[in-house]
Image 1: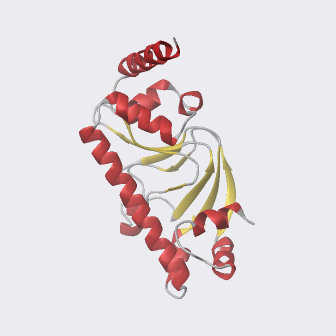
Image 2: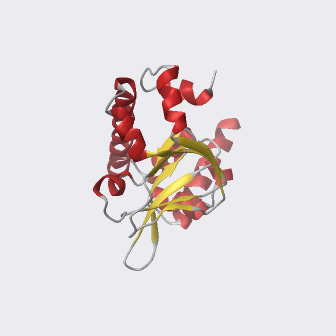
Length: 198
């Protein structure tokens, strides 16, 4: 059975007919590292992405020009500047690949049109939006209630091999700490691990 079909059914039950409609407005793409799919300050093309493999991020530039990672997307995430697509206004964030990525690119406007006549796809859209909202709420709570170590451990829980996939400064930016602070967190965790082994 198609793995993407199974994954979508983990959100809402769709049948093969609805899935086939979705595949007709979608295509597989291979994206290179550091490829931008939506850029801050620009209205993006109306495409949304299901990340099959690789890591992507959404970041914002500060007035000083420093980049701040708002979100890191692991495989089986939905990626895209949805607010910008819906409002037809420039994106507040840049969406970029941090590694080579495999994605399913879908025409969002065509998908919304299908949702008007296909209840199963409409339900899928609602469930995906609910999931995205819960993820952003979880992220906000983490930043307000957890220290750097807890946030780092949570990230490693979601993406176990994150340290091998992207540079330390990208992880630090997402955790809202400096690379030096992240290095200290890692050393402390490694020291605790060594003590537990002995």
